[in-house]
Amino acid sequence: MRTLISGLAAVLAILLAVSASTVAAQQSRPIADYYGSYVGQSVSINGAGISARDLSVTIKPTKEGFNLTWVTVIHRKGKKSRRKSYSIDFTKTPREGIWGSAVRRDAFGGRRSVDPLREDVPFVWATLKGATLTVSALLIIEGGGYELQTYERTLIKEGMKLSFTRLRNGERLKQITGMMSRMAR
Image (cartoon, one colour):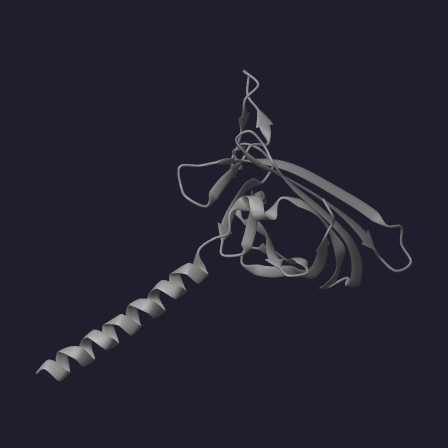
């Protein structure tokens, strides 16, 4: 009987150790780990063909959360390059690891999220899980459908890995992957 109890105790100790290490590995990194500037390139493959992109991302703290600014320069063969830039402040929510966008100013100068049912702009939020900061943008389109854009920015030894997906009513329209190096502070 004593051998059985000792064996069960050993198995239980191993299970607890494995469980604790799994939980520790899944814990999210603090948002401060992402602060900095990153530059790199990506390639997009879609129905229009292949296009190369130059990327830059800056993540910095704000009083109530963080700011994410990104610039994409799209190079298409035989066409003029196109530049897109975005900057969004994110504020803490009561839910751990979730930030709401604060892209509009209210009558008192405070920032607030948009209402995608009333405005033709996306509702944007950010989540942090493990080493990945995910920014999602949901747009309600004509006819009541939706478009969902997801940017996954994962910290890696070399800097940051980007994965972008655009879905319309569940159908994947675009997939972009890229790598960025962290710039010296």
